Amino acid sequence: MTVLGIDLAWSTRGRTGVAELDGAGRLVRVGTLRSDPELDTWIGDTEPAVVGIDAPIMVVDESGSRPCEKAIARAFGRFDAGPYPSNRGNPIFDPPRAWTLAGRHGWSVDPGSDVRSLALEVYPHAAMVGLFRLGRVIPYKARPQRALADRIAAFEVLCSQLESLPSLGLASSEEFADLRRAITVATRPVDLAIVEDQLDAIVCAYVAWLWQHDRPALRLYGDAATGFIVAPPAPDWPPSPR
View (cartoon, rainbow, N blue to C red):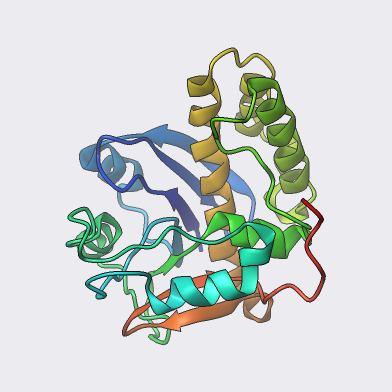
């Protein structure tokens, strides 16, 4: 059964990355879009077994960080993989866009339920640290102090790491080759932003596939009542020096 990965912008003003893997874990399609109608059209009649979403799904706290975010920070914060806090004090989380998306498509948000389609909250940075045994997050995100050339080099590292996951079949994927080419010819930050969303979506989809096919490789941080994030176990190796 197919799985989906969605790097969901918190509002419709942002760009959303989307990816689909088949039952064997191979990349089927990847892309980027914005509005809810575009997203609904992309999903179409697909009934995914699991959907990995990089965005808060359940937010009940009125302020501060959710328990699942604190748990992820304890496990991965030393590796610079601490999540941004989400709470109902921020209007974009009242309700969260991911919660509304799951409800619109009938996806369960209870990881203990036995249903056809399950939505999981995923945090790509933590997933990458755990999956690739990184000493620190790959610095591909836009930051004021990061030069475009340094980000391009970081994107190349991320692509190589993704290619090391055999089930994805990226070596034979024309769409992934297009993303690779877009990185090499990027001349503006926006050129990399379009690629970033799609690569994060592939990571989300891969975590969703692992939940279906290799559950012991993942842990549940938090719970269905207060919100949860799915990621690999806490690293048992030290972080790289800064």
